[in-house]
Image (cartoon, rainbow, N blue to C red; front, top):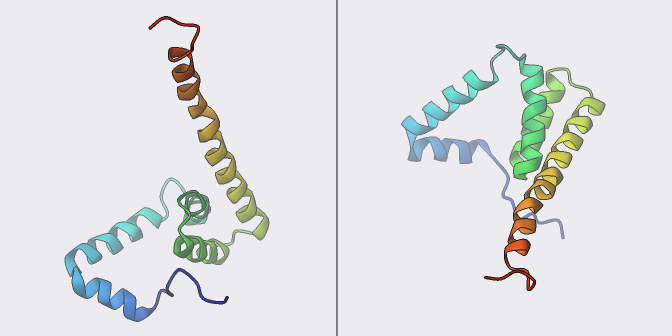
Length: 115
């Protein structure tokens, strides 16, 4: 069972993507370069953020790519794993916080309240 649900990202895929929508592809690449450029936050920190977000969005391509970039920018394996744990807590925290909606809904539909 070595087959993945995700096809490999290849230079050919990138070229085809650019061929099909060259202006948008160029705009996205420029946007990406601008976002990850050193600014108020250094790229090293931005790559840690990207690793965490990639885990929340569950994009395997982003997880692999940004983890590699984070390492190249000098992040340690411990820093990367800690960023992933932050992402996990935030994802779990979102479910916990949204329980407020369920608690209010239960109150509204309680058999003990009058409609």
